[in-house]
Image (tube, rainbow, N blue to C red; front, side, top):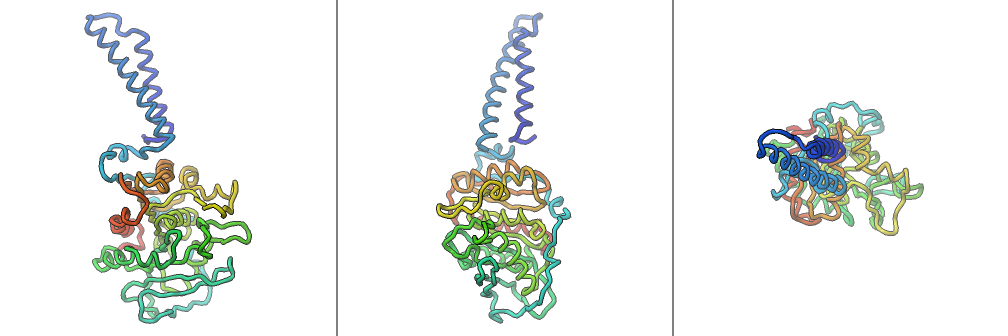
Length: 370
């Protein structure tokens, strides 16, 4: 039985009614005095305890202090691990409608922008803005543009304000290299697009109104299609994952959940699960914004993807919506969550968990298995 939702409340309510009936009836009416006193005191104490538990359950259901029994039982630990939703096997085996990357057609050119270098610098045309946007590509050791070997893809998403280079300078690429060298992760291509252009606009990775940036389309369609036509990538959705932190973590979750025909997984560090627009740019209203409410999506239209989620209880930006998201998750969405007790919204908090997250990727999405 879930810690959140109506099931626990109904169960406690039924138990309370039964105990109340026992108290009112005065049962047992016969027998030794000690037995009759015990028989009346115990149900009364139990009833009070159940009522208190109901109050706590209602408060937890409203504010999501704890997202699962595992989270509750590990509350005193510096970190807790819990699984939400369905199994990863079910998420990976699901058939997803819609044209995936295998259907991409067009002229292919695998020429490298900087031959002999692992970190490539490209500019990719974004039809929504009518211009080119920077995209970095980190190639695995031994990548040969003339060879037929193909690779899984990690779509790396930076924070805001930030640029693609800020992701490349973090711990992600070195950790990927270390795991690949020790054969704990399949050699992978890391595609790192500039998320928002112009950079001064916090697009929250949504497709805005006509004339606004179409960032969701940029990340879910334009960049993946470009990668298929210019890099030796695998096209199965189980060989593509998003990975981001903070603003990029929100984008990683949103893009993967809204486009499971392209992405099979998402890794989210200190992200959040509903748009958090800055003042001055709010392109969506009503039903348009509803489609980006990932808590609602997880509860009512859960996609078959596997997610690894990290947050800190003290992170006022990420944790509130993360807690609601985890509590709402339903199969076939599959979530492995790591929640730490202490720490704010900064890189040093999640850096120690980059390696475990990538190890999870290697054991969960088939394309990344070494």
